[in-house]
Image (cartoon, rainbow, N blue to C red; front, side, top):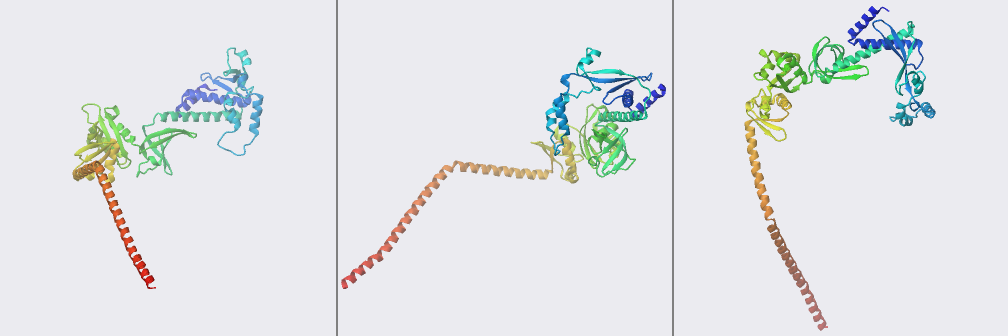
Length: 466
């Protein structure tokens, strides 16, 4: 083996793939062990190789697990296991088989004895007296120099696979630490609604929901993107990017404004409607530094650089204040606020001049909506006239309520006398009705009795005549 060329090849692979040299040597050792097992080993063996990069010498060992009787499956368990394997389930369901449920815990602890993989504790103690069950013991193997074509092909596949896995791990670890940062990427290709950008070692995905509305992308276009999150998949790490995330603006200002990157000026909050307009609240931690002037820059150079990167999106820079009234008044910029009234339940009323009412509200309510997001308060914009009208109406409502309350109180106090009067009136009315009914009954009785007397007199006369 040409040690010089071999060492330079290892260094070249480590540099190109950005993998540690130790990881490359470990990969080669695994490939040599796989090649040795393919030509000179047996099925089930665990072969371990050790490569010395300076001399090029390779040593091999067979590794066995030390077990005792409690770690092995019994004959009954093996028979049950064989019956369960030959049995075909009638229907595939989400639940596991009865055998798997019953032996799940035991299967993790117990193993089927294999001479190539396992060695009994008593026999292992003959070679290494202080060894315990569960440990590994190594037996040196004879070194080989010649390998067949199939073994060489196996070693090649192992090297390629392990280097690819190591490269994926490196990419995942690197970009996982970069979550929440911005990177520069080049549009590689467009597949449906997803945009794939080359961000260095891998491709990042810019999904549709993270794209700026109205922004068009073309292959070869260079953009600054925000690393939203990194996920590990079966096909390797996937880096999700964003152009619509609000923190993209703060990261762009960190690049353009030295006071923000050093911490002298802090961005307290951001409210953004991607592609249209944004508001940021800045605060100065050092005396003598104007936070708004630092963010705007000389002749607006700094803020214009951020705006051009965002495709012309408008940015309002306001000064942060711990006083809610002042902060809300600043957030409605460029409109001038006359007064801010703080109400319960995180609500506020902002009074602006009548001629600036539409400016404070903004197109489709955008300005006041962004101000509410920026401050975290529910803001109601009013003119002085509407506020006075509302206050008069409120006073009238209060007076009406007080009058109604007084009336209800008087009614409540006089309810007993009214009830008694009503009862007396009802009693008198009932008595009068009863008297009237009695009088009517007497009159009817008299009217009915007169004709009967006349009839009796007439009958007496007729009798006398006869």
